[in-house]
Length: 224
Image 1 (tube, one colour):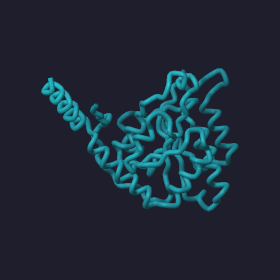
Image 2 (cartoon, helix red, strand yellow):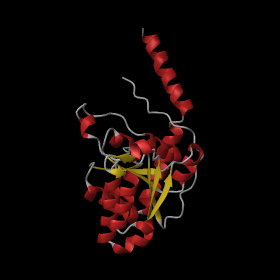
Image 3 (cartoon, helix red, strand yellow):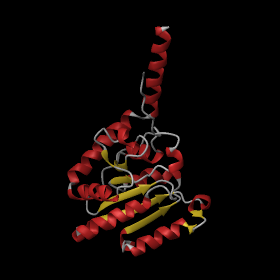
C-alpha cells in the first residue's frame, strides 16, 4: 500500500505577524455544523477563566456565506452567530471577512497565527461510517505555513500529527478552550506549529505530489 498526501498549491512563505495579539482564524464555509458556536463558547470560557487574556487575542471568521447555506428554517445563520457573539460579550474581539476572493485567501491566512477548525460530523454522515477525508481549509493552512487547532472529526488528527497543531474531541468545548489557552500561553509552540506546517506545505506542492504518483505507478508496472 502506498500513501500519498493530498497536494497543495505553492504559496510564498510569510513570517508570523507579531504575537500580540494572538490572531486566530476560522476559515471555511460559514453554516451550521461547522462547530463555530463551539469556538465562540470556548473563547468566552477562556476569557472568563483568565480575563487578562482578553486583550491578547482576536478571532476572525472568514469564508463563504452563500444564502442557500447560511439560511435555514430558523432564519439567517449569520445573524444567529452575531447574536451569540453579542450575548457572549465578544463583539469587540471578532473580525469578519466573508466571501473572500480566491486570490486573497493566502494573504488572509498568513495574517493570522493559528487556524481553528471546530468541525462536528453530522449525525447523517456518521451513519455511513468514519469519514477519512480532511478539509480544504486544513490544506490551505499547511500551504500557507500556519498551525491548526482542530477537532478529531474525519481524518484531521492524522493531518496534525506532524507537529503542526493540536486536536481535541469534537464537540468538547472545554477541550477546545484548553487548546486555545495553551496557544495563548506558549508563543514558541505557535511558532513551532507554523514552522512544521511550512515544511509540510513545501513537501506537498503539486509538482512533488505528481512525482510521488509517477513513482508509485512506475513501481506497480515494474512489479508486473
